[in-house]
Each structure stands twice: as C-alpha cells, then as structure tokens.
Length: 128
Ligand SMILES: [Zn+2]
Image 1: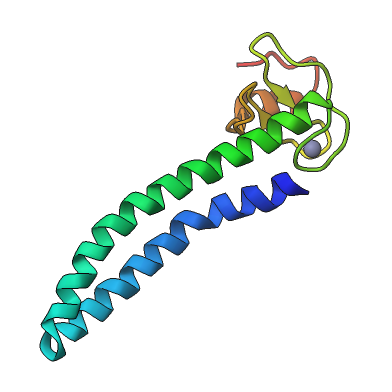
Image 2: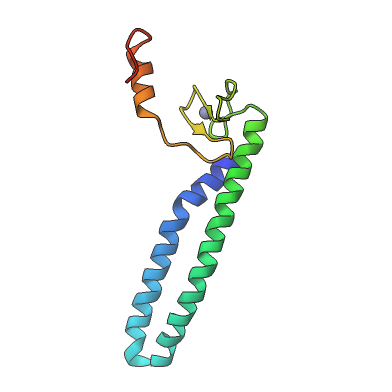
C-alpha cells in the first residue's frame, strides 16, 4: 500500500512541478508590467525552488525504492502483494501475477518485451 502511494506520487511529481513552474512563469510575465520587482523576485525564487524540487524528487524516489525493498525482503510483490518466485542471478524479481519487475535496489525494471513475447508464444518457440 505504501509502495503504491509513493509510486503514484513519484509518477506525478515531475508533471506537477512542471505545471507549477509554468504557472509561476505566467504570473511573472503578467506582473512585469504591474509590479516588476515581484517578477524579479519570482525568478530568484524559481531558481531556489528548482533545487528544492530536485531534492524532494530524489527523496521521493529513495522512499519508493525503500518501500519496494521492504516488500521484496518479505517475498511479496510491492505492486499487488502476491508472493514472488526466488530472485534471479542479478537479484531482480518479477511478479507473475501483475508482471511488475524489480531490481535488487527496489527500482522498477523496464519490461523485457522480448522475453514476455517468448513466454506468451509458448515453450517451443526459441527466444530471440
Ligand atoms: Zn505483482
């Protein structure tokens, strides 16, 4: 549950920050004729807010990976909670229920489409 909340927050965080900065840009652009000092203040505030936004993004990513590792230690899928098969040589684990794949660090692995196609085609088909 915690993993899914953190994963969703992490997924939407970048877009939310982007739209916040677009809103600040539009506000600064309109204020330049009314109160130029405020738009200058927004520029400097934006630079420092960018540093904070990057740091918050890194903390969110680390929290998501930590929640995933905690779930993987219990041999439970972080996404759906079903039990996981043993880890492969690199420490990665793939859930057979939901298809989620995770590195040993807890980071989600990108889908291995060639392997998934080979598995869907059946055991007699050679994997490419
Ligand atoms: Zn799963």
